[in-house]
Length: 345
Ligand SMILES: NC(=O)C1=CN([C@@H]2O[C@H](COP(=O)(O)OP(=O)(O)OC[C@H]3O[C@@H](n4cnc5c(N)ncnc54)[C@H](OP(=O)(O)O)[C@@H]3O)[C@@H](O)[C@H]2O)C=CC1
Ligand SMILES: CC(C)=CCC[C@@H](C)[C@H]1CC[C@H]2C3=C(CC[C@]12C)[C@@]1(C)CCC(=O)C[C@@H]1CC3
Image 1 (cartoon, helix red, strand yellow):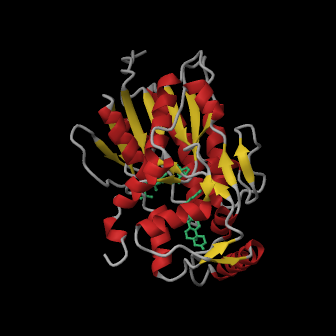
Image 2: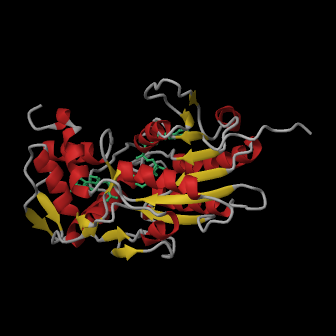
């Protein structure tokens, strides 16, 4: 039988490394002296000394090339949540993750760190200081959440000390920061279309928004502390800024920071949720004829109008996690990074 050379513990691959979180992770890993292979369906940038492997993670052969002599794999590839294509989520998040696990086994990878999501326990109703022992959502609010649940289960169940293959899942919430293609751009686009005048509900709902560098920090800590004798094996960890904030205050700070007015008028939550549900059903019925993606999906209304914040006590205890960048500083850095979205630009 051919002997496999033991890969260096600082050799890793980032699946989804062209994406928002993936690219920040790649940059920080390189700063910390890791050798990094990037694997993604598209190449978004070039970084000296960082080989890029373009491919679909459902393609085992393509993955195997990127995983050669790698000891740690970070899996942060996923279709965007706004997508409503059930088959795509199933193929990438479930079948693709099975392929990733299989390829890790074949390539002799020792650790797999999955970017899951705190939304795996969110059903559209309030979660206050939720811990990791909350049950998975029984009625996931969209296909993204449904497949993130299956994906997390697959990765955590694959953890095997006997096989020398250790896994952990990081569950961030509301990631934001420079180059994020979703949160700030969606918000500003909504404001520019004159639709950011209303607060859904009474505006007091608390939510976690997590600065991207803190999420990266959580991933690297997890990778470095994941050992056969550590409590991290096969566990999920919430990673947040640990500073829940009113959803509408956070949105207002970003809007005002970029020169737009904050929303002022209130609309009842149940009314807006009901309308969003109706529009979603209409879009579903019309799908064979026309594809509509309403701004106000039931998921978005639920995210904007309920409490959903999570305890990261487990990450603090097991891996010594503390957010590196406080929320106030994170908002300033984020606003400064979007000069092109400033009002009048
Ligand atoms: N952003 C957030 O607030 C949160 C994100 N997460 C999780 O974090 C991870 C990263 O999210 P984020 O950086 O925001 O997302 P991005 O969409 O920016 O990054 C994901 C990357 O994966 C790529 N990708 C998609 N499908 C495949 C595939 N089949 N094979 C290879 N690459 C693929 C995407 O390419 P393309 O763009 O072409 O699709 C993209 O480059 C995801 O797993 C997400 O579920 C969890 C909680 C919150
Ligand atoms: C906390 C968390 C999980 C945030 C994830 C990011 C997005 C889901 C949000 C970023 C911008 C938000 C937004 C809305 C919903 C949630 C977001 C898309 C609205 C569509 C909610 C209804 C409105 O009045 C307009 C909002 C625009 C911004």
